[in-house]
Length: 320
Image (cartoon, rainbow, N blue to C red; front, side, top):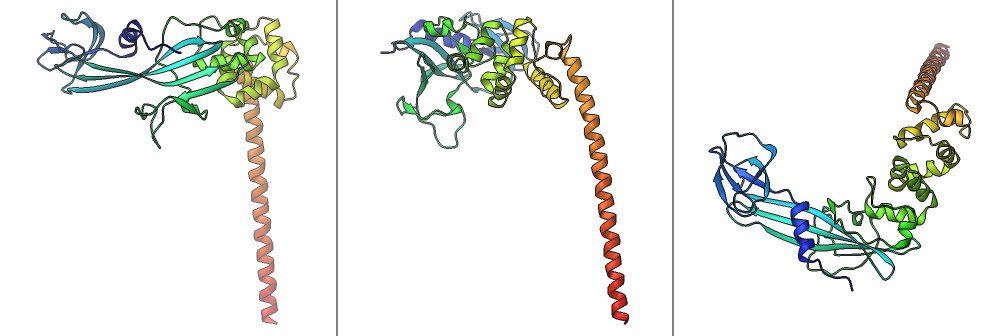
């Protein structure tokens, strides 16, 4: 029942997912890679990020100085929609082929659908992938069918279509249109399955939310230190670097500090405290390393003495 892409959506994908450029030769002749029109440009030979408009199609172009005549670009667009109470993420493979002097050719193919139920359960429909393939390789003759969930289907799209249809359960759990560095699936799956992720999103702890949703090891840390996180939320303590703050809590635990004490959990500068404790721990590690090395040398020396003693005993027995 899901509709095909509309002409407006296809045009938006072409305009926003693909880099449009003009090829410039050393003689300053510029050719629009989109429509194939050529005109005489200025004499600057370096690439420029300042857009230049094509006189024919009026498209803003990035100018490249090169003799190459064939180009290919691949990007992904995501359409966030809903169907029968499910949140649906539709991923489209946007391929642009440019031959200088000819009109560009665009292909837009749906390659993955991720269906997410209000209770957080999810399923994947996708095209087949060739064995040992890269992310931009699909078997385009195959059909969208149920596939085992794999990381390769969690696509980070180049652009998300601006008109998004969100199910009420996701809105209820704090989503307001911003993904804060996460993929759409990471965001929706996290806040539907983990109340901690919902709390982090609603409280504005986006750095910790990124750690929670993307890294299972850091997620376990956040769950282990959840009482400390709640202390920060109650005290409106801002955490802009989630990984650093979690490492700081590990240091507090290493030195036997109370991670349920706001004095330690919410210092004036957790970066400064982290650096101080990290330097202290490194000094301890260095002392332990030196002591281990001394112990090893003593053991080696003791072995050498014992070997020499046994050798002398054998020589004395041989003489007798």
